[in-house]
Length: 260
Image 1 (cartoon, helix red, strand yellow):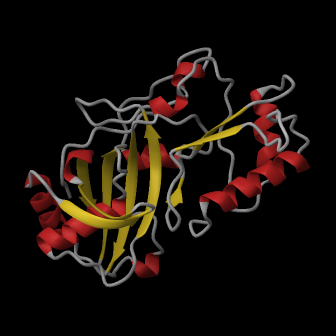
Image 2: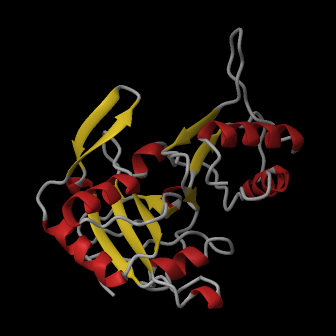
C-alpha cells in the first residue's frame, strides 16, 4: 500500500464511506463533495502507521461505530486504528512533527552511525528536490531533531537476520518546504557518502504535537478524548508503535542522537 498515492487512498475512503452507509456531510453548490479534510499526508512510496483526517457527519454516530464500519469496508492494507469525536479545533496545527523508520539493506550499522554523527554535527545540510514549483534547494538540518541507529534485526525473518542491515529512526519537524526522510538520506549521502545499494523502506510511525525540549511526539487525539489516556512510562518508540492496533497511540520516546 505504500505505493498508493494520496488520491488513491482518498478514493478508497470515499468508496468505503458509501459501502458502510456512513452519513458523511456534503458541501453545497453545483459540485457537492464529502466534507473530509486530510492533514500531513505521507508521500507516495512510503508506508505509514499514523495518518490523520477529519470527517464531518450529517448525523450523530458513536466513534467506535464509525471506526468499525469504515475499517470493514476499506481494502486490505488500510486500517482505521481509532476514531474520536472532535472536541477541539486545530488538528492540523497539532501535527508538528513525525517519527520515521528508514530500513536500509546491505548497510553496516557502524557506517550508518558514523554518517548520522556527521550529519547531526553539521550546521547546515542543503539538498535539492523537484517540487511542484520546479527544482528547489533547501536546508534539511533545522528540521531534524534527532536520529537513532540500530542493527535492524528486529521484525525480520530469522533466515534474513544474518544479512547486513541498518535502521534509522528520525524525528523530523514539519516545515515549509516539507523535509522528508529521503531528503535526509540525500544529505547523508552528500556529507558521508552513505548510499544504500537498494531503495530504503520508509515508514511513518507517529506524528503529532512536538516537545521541543525532548523531541518526543505526543498523541494528537489527547485534546479530543473525554479523559486523558493512561500513561505507561517511557517505552521505546518501537514498542509503542507495535501497540497501536490494540491501544491508543502514546507519546514517542525522546531522541537524543545516534545510538546502537
